[in-house]
Image (cartoon, rainbow, N blue to C red; front, side, top):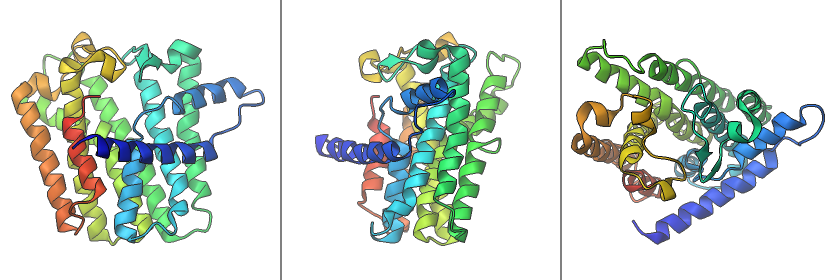
Amino acid sequence: MGSDFEARLSDKAGYVEDILQKFLPREEGYAKTVIEAMNYSLLAGGKRLRPVMMMESYKLFAGSVDNISELWPFMAAMEMIHTYSLVHDDLPAMDNDEYRRGRKTTHAMYGAGMATLAGDGLLNYAFETAIMGSANGDPKFVNALKVLSQKAGIYGMVGGQCADIVSENRTDIPADEMKDILHYIDENKTGALIESSLMIGAIIAGADEDEVRMIEKAGSNVGIAFQIQDDILDIEGDEALLGKPVGSDIKNAKTTYVSLYGMEQAKNKVKELSDEALGILDELGFKDSFLGELFSFLIYRKK
């Protein structure tokens, strides 16, 4: 996995940036400040992994890119939802981080109140954007909206974040139960948006129910592996590469896969989950795809 892959990933992230520009709300009127904060958050950079995964899933199931513009509103919406979650994660009441991707977080720039509103605005605007792409009432777009809303909400990412907060600083939970809780957190807090990205790409491309379930499982594995790798990097990562301070999990007394299982087992689990996800792609007939390369890349990422 060398610089050629990273160059291709960067090109695809650039494509996503161009799409985001098409859907940005205009910074005007009495809501101008919150819209500025929303756009500041949304344009903070990053690999745009979720929209890229959605796009690559679509390409594989559609077999072409002829109609990929039908996916654009969902790609933009997914990045808005992911960004809102980061804005809220960084707030003083949550992780209290002042830097992300090498620059000041939204609350550090605009204050905690405006950052909260910016996150709210991004979440709501994500659905306004996705609905733009669903106006013709085609059932596949309705199904995609259902996946987007469920995986982002209380039965997905928000549910995972809830369990994360409730289990913080708890010493009274037995180890076996804590392992179950941690799996739920990683499956939902991180995995849900990766799952839905892959599923929405497949659904809009016309995949059948079995295929959508299989790509959902691959997404679940990758999401959990991604979060475990994040936990590893919070201990072993390079602050200059990460663009944010390391050690926040320990500082906030968070239970992670590393704290429960140890570093070696955590690293082994990342590889095991990722290999399973690659096996699912092979089963779907997508061996040697860019999506497979992307799954592998997540094992070795340093930022």
